[in-house]
Image (tube, rainbow, N blue to C red; front, side, top):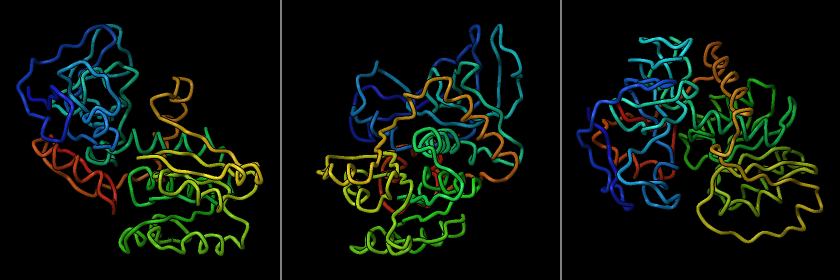
Length: 319
């Protein structure tokens, strides 16, 4: 079979499509024939060595969707032919097939395409954990979703809408702002504007927002502390550098700042996350949006695109 392999850290060009041995399922494992792969910013950080060290060569990728090809001894409730989405894998997902633990494979409802399914795990699990497990968001509260037109932003808006929250979302383009309004945000704000902080405070009558889902903390965190309401909560989901903040702003408001990485979540947190995702995919409250589909051979181009501003959904590699 073919798989993307990385033999050294570096730019997107270090990813090469190679022939590798066909995987075989051991006890407790599942082989998934991959139909689509979700591309996430974390994939680029791992490829570049930011999240090193790694054992070379490796196949990148955490998210995928496809069909179960075979299962190992002791695997129950998963059968060949099942449509599934993948929550990480043992072998990497940028490949025609991937090896997963049975616990890493989750049912994909028939109403969701493989391309949509490839954009489920990292964005939706991250959004759920940020909103509910870290920030304890509640119906009636006001949530600010920074970068609302990206993968995690879209997921956060859909979850917040389904739970009866008031949503303000930011996006850097008119198309992105139109998208977040269609998804259910009450207000869309241009985060490239120098006045967006004043605009958001105005939308809340000067009170501020209860919860902020922050995708680019090195740019926004200090301003977040000006916009957060008393006893508000901020989840730092994304960051690409350092920033100076005034801690007194957090002190004055009893505000909380939560750093989070999905890969730190224990199994006790992941189980309810996947239960919520499955219910939302099945009942129609969650609908992953695919912005661009590229062939697996263009993984390098996908890594360039995922770091550019102006996202309007997920970038997916078709296998």
